[in-house]
Image 1 (cartoon, one colour):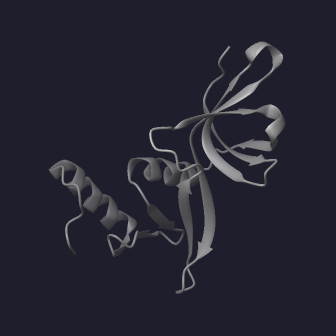
Image 2 (cartoon, rainbow, N blue to C red):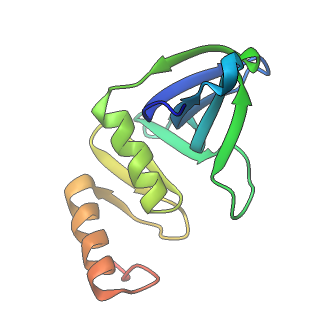
Length: 139
């Protein structure tokens, strides 16, 4: 029987910490955890002294976003209800390779070369999606 999906942070016996959309498959008493789009989130400091979150895929496997893990490979698992963390994760899934600064600014990756506010970035991304352009407009 399949459980509800929820966002969670998992600490694996390998030492890895993963953020993912999780569901539990009871599987006859031998529970299996299903991870959807698992990522690693790292807190980093920018040269300017700000803090930001670096998000990258847990495993670099193209065409694969669902992974199964047995309970005995997990040291601990904690549900995440922090809306900001969930927003980072969702934005990462929707927009590849964005580093999110925690002071309300967003650093887009070096391919884009922009430093902008969240509102400006949101407006810019909305325009990009609306215009269906593959690469961002030059600032």
